[in-house]
Image 1 (spheres, rainbow, N blue to C red):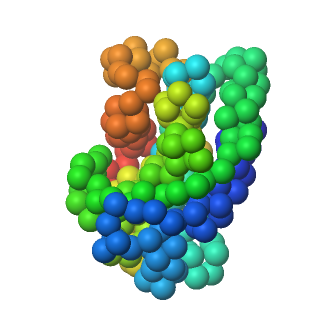
Image 2: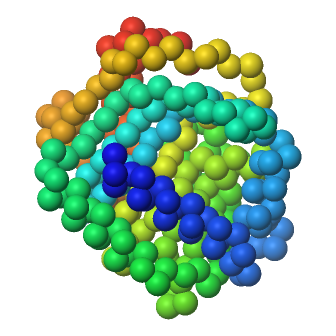
Length: 233
């Protein structure tokens, strides 16, 4: 879990930097990223979603974590339930992953954010999403973020390596907001696999394609819910 903690820390740092870098856009009619962050604070009291977190190393997923999460934003309370975990058993790979990530974000800075409407996506909410691509001073894409244009909630966030491939991703699947959610029942049973076992069960997929990885996460989620006898969405 150490690598995830490091990634999340840097992720939060990058978010703060991006808020003040939204100077260029494809259309001035689209809301800025700070606009949607403010909108979320105004409109969203709570949410429930399946959260997929993925970290890559050497072009393949090193770590996949799938949890069900209910968050009360007003009272700053989070209820989470582990559902599936795919991780390397090699401490060397984990250490290399931390090193690669730290090197990739060293001196990381955002010079502009380009806004656009998202035209395709992985779930039923994608139609109303706004996309924000962040670039450094050399014009290299560093991150992409998708937020719901109606309430500002973040649906997907990707950080890219120097070669433009995914480095880390957080994706919210079947995101619901402002409802009375039941407490999560955690029976401490969750799916634990290696990447080789995932390929054996679900077939080969394009490791560097974020949408392909999301599809695998959905299959892992469905399998985990079957094992737990959970069919309630």
